[in-house]
Amino acid sequence: MAGQDDNWRPLVRPLLIPTWVVVGAFALLPVLLMAVYSFLTKEFRGGVIWDFTLAAYDQFFVTRGLFGDEPAQLEWTYISIFWRSLWQAGVCTILCLMVGFPTAWFIATRPAQTRGIWLFLITIPYWVNLLIRTVSLKFLIRDNGPLNESLMSIGLIDGPLPLVNTNLAVQLGLFYSYLPFMVLPIYAAVERYNFALSEAASDLYATRWTTLREIVLPVVKPGIIAGCILVFVPALGAFLAPDLLGGAKTFMIGSLIDEQFRGSQGNWPFGAAVSMILLTLVLVALLLHARAAGREGAR
Amino acid sequence: MKGVRHYPGFLALTLLCLVILYAPLAVVMAYSFNGSTSITEWGGFSLRWYGDVFTGPEAGRFGQAAWNSLTIALMAATAATLIATAAALAMVKGGRFRGRTASFALINLPLMVPEIVTAVALLIFFTTVGLTTGYGTILIAHVTFCIPFAYLPIAARLEGIEATFEQAARDLYASRAQAFRLILLPLMAPGLASGWLLAFIISLDDFIITNFVKGAGMETLPTAIFGSVKQGIKPNIMAISTLMLAVSVLFVTAAYLINRKGRQSP
Image (cartoon, rainbow over all chains, first blue to last red; front, side, top):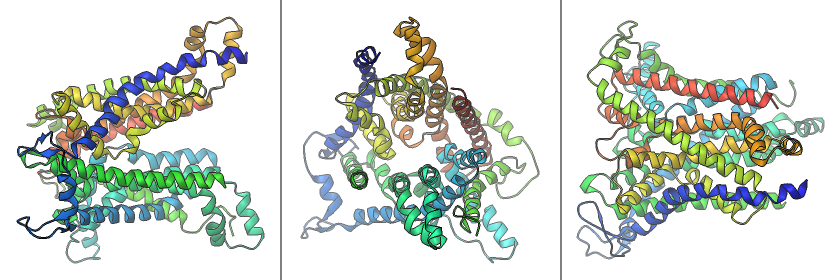
């Protein structure tokens, strides 16, 4: 029996060929080509000339003054856009964790029959088009929108809160977009959690909150980290929330990249370089996670 | 003390979570039935904006965009499901082999790379190889990023099917092909269905990548909505959004029910 099973196994392996061809040609190859593009020379009509240069990275990191004749200094314009994106994505991750963990815990501790329904309720908005969700949020929080109107009618505020075109609106948009990503992996971890551990801690006179901190959090940590990555990575490169809910002052990496590929004003090598820097940040985050997970597993 | 599972305030946060997730959608749904031309004033319940979606001045543009979205999603989901099914069979049934880890990373690559980076990379790629951006390039892009979404439920389902079913069929002198066609494939069906449905929704929903590879004059529903919203939110957008929302909910509910049914049978 076993022999019969083993010798047909190699026969199904070629079934991976279509994946290799399609994903290799239309996902891996384009990213590699983009890396090459980031070292090319910009053509003034928004194309490229195949001359290798570090100009795009130079433009990102270095400034030599308005006329290019001053001593080279660190360019803060783009670094601060990255910093704002990192900050916004970081705050978003923490907020999602603060709401997502209790939600995931609550759902995972329901009776088995109702768990599926709670989970389903959480996942539905995730499947609704992100664009539509962002537009809906904009509609809700705009100056004379339903949120401001109802807050004013109950007398909580006198004039409308200016929410749209602020960092707060972008933050709200990011939080709203990626919250389900936090709940699902933590839910999966809590569902597997052995509650006897909590009971043992309780028998030893630990308070509930001590148990949560000392026992539960370390055990479900992989789920928490997975959730944080699933929120942080897309939030970092988000385009719709900053574009629709933010203004000029809330420029994030996504908009910076987008701008470089619009019409004749664009700069493709620079856009490719910014994308490369974003991709590097993401890969570093993923590698750190993989290393941490590896160390965890070795213990 | 209500036991170790209960933490005070967690229910409140869960309800807050649901309110945050649903409030904007509920508001837009409610306002899509607004009879007024202004989005600010309530002009009584009316279906006029739903009528406007199909017969109004923008009906042609949105109709064409909806048709593009639908046909692309149908083809992309089907192609991605076929490719992902083949990959899942190789990964789950192929034992250990060289390149298995690399294959796994490749399947998940579209999930790892930030969407905007994928979008830029594809635009650069299509331009370099000289493919005119339009319907075809959107389709290629959608097939590619739908593969991991189709793969996940299919592989999960396949892993849950014990080898004994197939072995029993083989013991009863079924050929490999017969065992696959008559036993394995029907057992995989729920996974295939939810994989296809998820890929379909993912394709229907995509905005960022489509926006980069669509070329001039070609629109899908999300890019058409985005173009319209840039000039301000109009009532017809709320009706279109509500319709799209309904389609998504319908498909996810179908996927959920099929999956649950699948888990109940063997």
